[in-house]
Image (cartoon, rainbow, N blue to C red):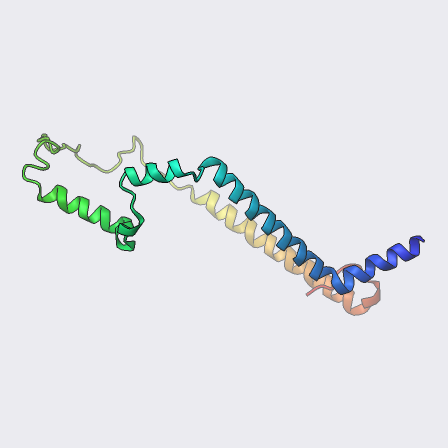
Length: 158
């Protein structure tokens, strides 16, 4: 019995798995669409009274134009109307004294900045010594690998 169930599962997953997943996705999308449609009807009931209220507020669908729904055009018209209004901006732009910025001067240090040349030379020498040691170890690894490649553990040296 168990072997039959396992065989059926592999048959479904191999042959029809992608079809069943697609079908499940379509069912979920339809259910979500139906749920959202019911939710919108509950939030905004479409009764005769609601339609009367819309028409009373001036919402006549016959007078609706796609061009009137352009928000950029509405903003542009609003700005043009404000600019061309006489006296616009007289009350909004209050005259103020100009902003005074402090004089800019370079940063003054109390004592001069000194570079420790000996410390820099020691750091450079330490870096050179580390490079020499790494190169020496690499050359020793290459020699050992060349003598016995099968005795090498890990990636070969390069």
